[in-house]
Amino acid sequence: MNAFLSKLQEQRSAKTGLIDATLNRAVEEARDITEIELANIQALKLEVEKLDERIGQIADIEARNAANAEIAAKLEAASPVETRQGGYRVTSEEATYHERSAHDFLADAIAAEFGGSYEARERIARYQNEVRLEKRDSGTSNFAGLVVPQYLVSQFAPLRRAGRPVLDISTNAALPAQGMTVNIGRLTTGVTSYVQASENTAPTESSPDDTLLTVNVNTVASMFDLSKQAVLRGTGIETQLLGDAVRSYQAKLDSLAINGSGSSGEARGILNTSGINATTYTDASPTWAEFFPKLVEAIQNISANFFGGATHIVAHPTLIGCWLRALDTTNRPLFNATAGNPFNAPGTFDRPAYDMGGLQILGIPVVSDANVPTNLGSGTNETAVIVGDFRESYIWEDNGGTPLYVRFEQPDGNIAIRTVVFGFSAYTAGKYPTAFSAITGTGLITANWA
Image (cartoon, rainbow, N blue to C red):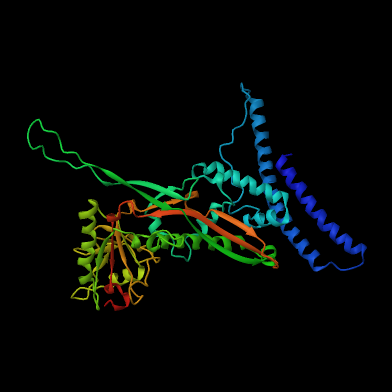
């Protein structure tokens, strides 16, 4: 029999034995089972059901293998061929935790931390080793906590949160395994070329110089308490809580890349980076016709000062909606769908949606990001438009941008589990500040747009 199948059956027997022992004890003592005993029986019953499902899967595979082996033996007997013996090589294996797994990551983590479950600890350790092999370049061997399974991130990260549109178009790199800063050398004073005044004269010397750009490693975290009853008796806790924690983490990281202050543990976002190009749009009754020259100015500032070109325009979806509803003098929309083969339109799009479905202005893709602030200015009601070469927007993250680490604690005096999810990252747009332009001002109060 398959050794793994035997182990599963042994585990099932042990758990059913515990259920029988609990019931027999109640019979011997001529009493009903207690609430605690009932909770334990129900928990064991769920584990037995999961084991039964896994046993059925493995048994089905064993039956198929046996049938195939029988057919192969008959063919070999009918037409014997020379064979060579050798070992097996495993090229791929399903991860310990995945969508169809019989075990829950969160339940195992809590059971290992507080329940002393050997089986849960073994699964957690096996999963950590899987991640360590798969993500060795990102330094997961130095993780201080547990790495959240990737299927939770891929399944829940895009749902009902603003997401991370700016970070997705930025240059992504793995965070160094050690240290709390990322250092970049910047040549701020270059070599100067001079004209030789006359023959056989020495060239004029120049003095190039560089400046160190230090980017701090920051921590973004979330924490929540959950009763042990909800953890032990609830359904879908893992996907609901960790999934939302991941989504919250990604949105917060993106908002900091846009408007982080650079102090109090925050990354310095694009809007607060010293040296970026600034364009002010002041208008009590803003319109697309009046805003458009400001947008062109912001684009041209990048060309004039960075000697490059903008790759994206980033704006809040509310402001983009103001653009899409702009009409010409005959009440026709200025922005048209590409399906209609528009002529002489300032911008085109595939479909109106949060990702803006291919919206372009002057041939530059427009990114809709709800993390762009809408509380700027003296009246705290202005938004901003960011134009830039986002290849010069840099984000260093652990584990390819997923959080990271998860810790479980037990608050003093409470029958609860405290979960802390956090990750480390470093962000900067300061390598080439003039690669970015920000348009701000009273003209970007969306409520005033016609």
